[in-house]
Length: 81
Image: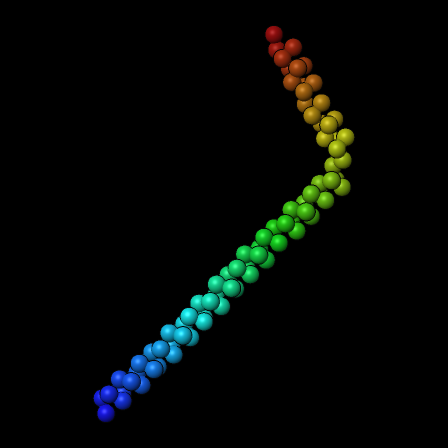
């Protein structure tokens, strides 16, 4: 009688271990898919930000800001003496 119980427990234990293995494999697959989706999402957001900044601030506008800032710096240095 005890031998039958131990054999049935062994079988159940093996089945549970197999189920654990499959669940862990599924978990790893889901984790990989999540990382892929997060990377795609960050790329999309980055592209949206780039397109928004290109529409809002044309390249010439940024150049004028830099030039104005440099002129202000030299003006401050000149009049500081």
